[in-house]
Image 1 (cartoon, rainbow over the protein chains, first blue to last red):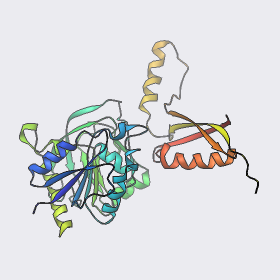
Image 2: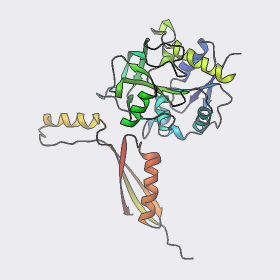
Image 3: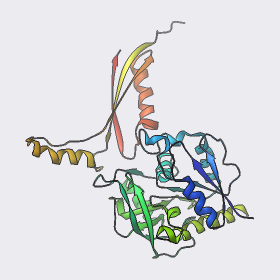
Image 4: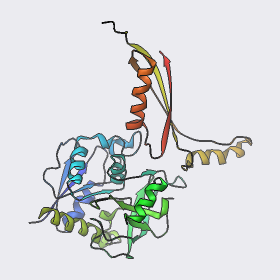
Length: 225
Length: 89
């Protein structure tokens, strides 16, 4: 039986269908979870997708974090369930306190929509277990507020605990320490600004996102057992 | 028991980035000023102003509530802080 991945839909999300398509193409079963739901409906993994949840009003993720489904996502994560936040989803997870730090406006104040190269820095996370350290992946970014920042103490902790999972080869947005993606202490919650779900088909110019989402499906299968 | 009657207070919350956090909007505005002839302006920063009205029995009650609100919702304490101004409405 294939694993079930819940993709959270907030008012203003716009990448949920991309995530559903990619998960389905990789052999998983995807279902959309409405932000007003109070449960994650028995899924084996959760993706918080990109977009502009609640219009990004106040700050990206600031209001999404209060959507009823987020309490269920927090409980799911606390129980060890794999959770990945992509782009706006990463912003939501930091605002919800599931990941440390914050995402501020890009250095240079430009909205960036381009292909970037990412280096896999850790294979110990639910998003990178099927990749190898040092792999360089071509995956697109599409954001205005992707400049990751955190306190010096948090940065030291992320480094020493091997929690920086992806770095930009050439930093596009001013992100501290070239960080593109991080994980939580338990390594089952990952946030990243690039969009692996948009790089799972040759027609889209890259399939380098596939190993990342395959890792998530593998983690979901493990969580299921 | 005597209960003080609630009165209205105007609240202004000014949210700004912590010192040391890059403020590309402020920096861009500052860089453009000399082209308009404003040569002596520095330290430009851009933040948010949030205004609302609060019913409470005292200014202290308002301040306590708004401090909490700022910490939990109106600011992201990782990168922002707030100054709060309260006046009787």
